Structures are given as C-alpha cells and as structure tokens.
Length: 402
View 1 (tube, rainbow, N blue to C red):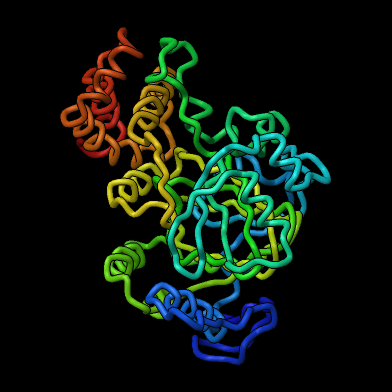
View 2: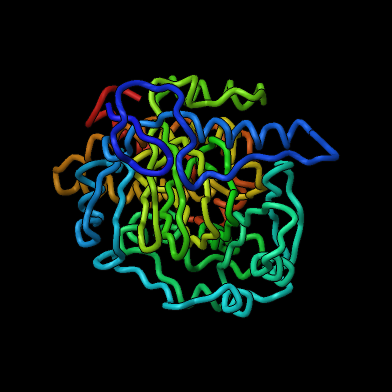
C-alpha cells in the first residue's frame, strides 16, 4: 500500500519507515527550565509524526458526495469505514457562515467554564470561555492549548447548527431518549454530543478512540487537521489498551500493521465509525464542529469499548451510555416485533449486535440499582426482564440460541 508523509497523501513507496520532516510540522522545543516527562512525550509525538511514513488514507476512507451520505448508505455498508465528504452540499446540515470565535463566545456565554488541554504537559486546566477566546485571539501565546470539550447543547449556538441528516437519523440519543420523562433533573436528557473544538497551531491528541465507543462527525469549519487512523481490529484494540496502560514513549503506529493519514481542510466532513483509533495533529489554528453519537451498526463494539474504560483523550467526559443503550434496546425491540409481524428478518449486523448486547443489559440491571430504578420509573408498562426475554425469543427463531 502507498505510504505518505504528513504534507500530502502522495505515494512514496511501500512499507513504513523514516523520512525527512514534511512541511507544516513545527519543530519541537522543550522548556529551557523544565524538561518534564510530559514535555518529552509531546516532543516524542511530534518527532514520530515528522518521521513516520503513513499509508494513504485513500485506501480505507470512502470519498462521497454529500448526497450519497444517507441512512440507506450506512445500512448497506454497516458503517464499517470512515467517510470523507469534501463539500457540505447535500449533507443536510446547517452551520452559520462567517462565524467567529467572538460569536461562539456570545452564543455560548463568556462565563462558561470548561477543560482545556495543555499540549506540552498533557494536563487539563480550567478556563472560562472568555479567557479561552482571549488566548485564542492572541498573537503572543506562551503555551500550546487545545479546546476539546466545549459542549454547546441548550445554548444559542445549538439553535444555529444542525447535524447532517444521516447523523440525526442514526443517533440513539436523538431517536430513543423518551420525550415524556418526569420533570426532574435525574431524567434530563444528557447534554452530550455537540462539540465546538478550537485547536491552536501545533496541537495534537495522541492515539485514542472517541468517548463511550461513539461514532463521530467532524466538520472542519476553518483551518486544517491531519488524522492518523488505525482500524479497530481486535488485535489493534488490544495493543491500544496495552500501550495506554504502559504510558511509555512508544508510538502506537509502530506497534500495529498499518496506520493511515487523512488530511482535512476547511469545508471537509469526516464520518468516523465506532472504535477507529486515531491521533490528530493541527498545523494551523482550527475550528471544528463535531457530533458524537451511539448507533445501531456497531452495538457490540460500542459496549466493549465502554466497558474497557479508555475514554476520549484525557478529558473527563461523563455520558450515561448504559441508559441510552437501554432506551435504544426498547426501541429496537419494537423494530424486531414489526419484522416478526411482517415475516421479515432484521439485517445480520443488527441481529449480531443485539445478541451481543443482551448479556450487558442483564448485567446492568442486576448490578446498577440507580439505572434499574430510572428505567422502571421511565417505562413502568414494560418490565426490563420482559425486554430481554422477548429479544431472546426472536433471536432463537432467527439465529443460533442465545
């Protein structure tokens, strides 16, 4: 397969190895006064990205026109590979033209506090949005910072941005969260999934998969990004877990059979399926709008990654994936019942996903009392055991015994 450097996706030969530094990569300089382990990790990442030959993302990323990115397309392909769309036309999403960081501050509120990643130290710091915007607009930055956790649900910004049609038609939180829950904070719909990422030149995030096993839609509003992609095979995921637990200076792409690079520029959208391991480098200041979502095409992998407890890159996210999965299960049971009534069979990926989900549903209601109370109050007419039993009854007819 073709390999490529960071500056392009031009073929440069077979295999992986070392090459001269591509254009666009900053030189790494540690502090003159402190040479900490985390600063060395930062330099190690930059050096590895400069020197490693990545395979061309064109070999694994499907390039489509926006009109081709539909729910039917993901049904046909089971959303197994990343999808890149160069222009927004046809995707059915809305983002205001000419939005500025000052507009973002105004729409979300200057006093909003959120976590910022200090890239060199790889530690989190807390800032208000007003403080962040002041830093982002400054020409004299003392540190490289990366804003990855600015969630904008229930803000004025949310009213102005609409995710692509296909995302809205796949997202379990949008599809299955009940609209008639009690008026109590315990039952509020989670404020999760809608992010505005603002990354400064030289930012990076090391290899990870997205929080709670979610899939993600990235839209590059301004700037550019390089994504380094590793497929979510069992072997690669095992290596990620092992590599993450050791926290040493090894470069994950050295430990896996293949790693691909994709260059995103303003106007591009990248749809990333569940579990795809990726690192990201930002060669110039960038603004990204992003939706994270659980979906039906990777049920088993979503849950296994959630149980594995390696969440999104060193930022403290909290997402009630078990609750959302249970609500989705109740919705999928209705779908199974319709198939049964019509003498049709659900697609294979869905049968396998539900079969893998059942043991976790059983475990969660047996061990998570708060979850069980929440679900029983939310759906008093449908017992949780009944949901599981009915799934098992259908699966025994359609596939091997559960």
